[in-house]
Image (cartoon, rainbow, N blue to C red; front, top):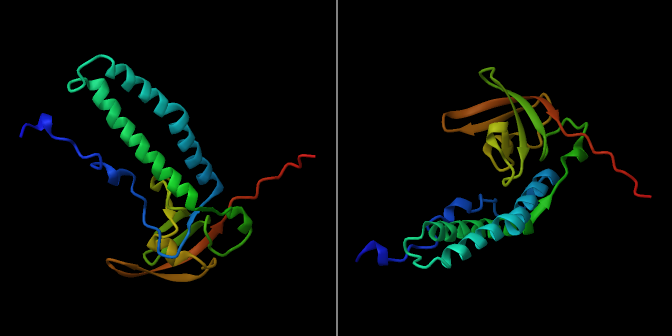
Length: 190
C-alpha cells in the first residue's frame, strides 16, 4: 500500500514526554521554583502557543488540499505535541508535593533541596543540588532525589561518609558541605 494512504500513529512520539519514574509509594517532590516553572510552561502552552498553532492549522485547512499542505501537516503534528505536553504537565502538577528546602536552612544534614559538596574516594570533589524529577537540569549540576547519588547522600551530615554502589563497584563519598537556600522574607500584607 502506498505510504500516502496509511495513517501515521498518533503515539509515535509518546515517549518524548513520558513521566520519569517515581518510586512506588513515593510522592512527586518539587521545589516551589520548579512548581512555578512547570505551571508557567503549562499556562503558556494553553494561553499562547496552542491558540497560535490552531489559527495556523485553521488557515492552512482553508487553503484546500491538505495532503500536501506543509503548514497543515506540521501544524497538526505540533498540536499533538503541545496537547501531549499539556496532559503530561497537568498530571505531574496534580501529583506534585511542593517542598520548600529553605525550611532546612542552617542544617548540616542532607534533605531534599540541599546543595551538597562531597569528595569521592579518589579525591574528586563535586557539588550537586538535589531536586525533583521534573525540575532537574543536569547541566547545572542538579540531580533527581531518586538518583543513586542523591539516595546515598540523603540524611547524611557534613563529615559523614556514605557508600555509593556504581557499575564499577562500591565508592565512598565524604560529605564536605551542605547548603540550603535562605528563607525568603515574608511581606506582611497588613
